[in-house]
Length: 205
Ligand SMILES: [Zn+2]
Image 1 (cartoon, helix red, strand yellow):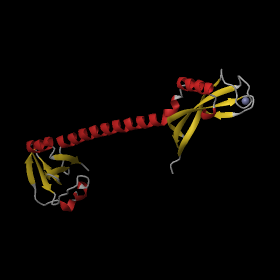
Image 2 (cartoon, rainbow, N blue to C red; image 1 turned 30 degrees about the horizontal axis):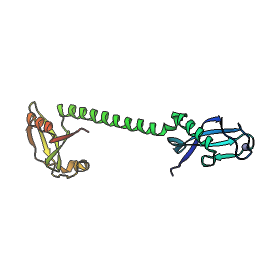
Image 3 (tube, rainbow, N blue to C red; image 1 turned 90 degrees about the vertical axis):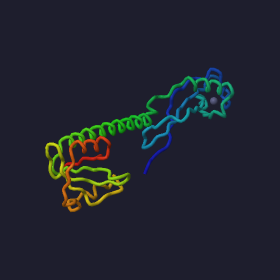
C-alpha cells in the first residue's frame, strides 16, 4: 500500500497594517499566515504544490480564507506570498529520486564497463572449458566450447542447438548439447570475430 497525501507547512505570520476585522471591527488585530503545501509519499515530502494563506483576528479569533479577506488584506497577502520562500526540504523526495536515478545510471555504466573488461581478459587468455557465445546469423545464436588451446589455434566443439534469444542462450549451454566433433580456428580469426561482435560473450565456470 502506498500512502500519499499533502501537508501544509507554516512559513510566516505577519500583522496586517491595513486590515480591520470584519467580524469585531477592531483595527490592528489581523495577522496573515502563509503556508506552503507539499505532496508526500510515506510521509516523505516530495515537492511543493502551492502556497495558501489565512488571516486570523487575535481579538475575536475569527479565521478568514483568502476569498473572505477584506481587499486591503488580500493585497498584503499577495505581496507577502511572493516574498515568502518555502523550505528546501519540501523538495527532499524529488531530490532523492534524482540522486537515486543518477546513482543507478552511474552504477550500470560502471558495471557494464567492468563486465567488458573481464570478458576481454577471459578472451585474451583462453582455457579449456571456456564457452563462447556467438552469432550464427542475424537473430540466431549458439555457443562454442573450448576443448584445447595451442599457441596459434583454439580447438572447440560446437553446440548442436541454437537460440533466437540472447537472454535464454545460457539454457542451451549443457554438456550433452555439444558435438563430439572438434574444430579448430586460428586465434587471429577468433579475434576478428570478437572485434566484429560475432563472438559477444565469454563464460568461464
Ligand atoms: Zn476580530
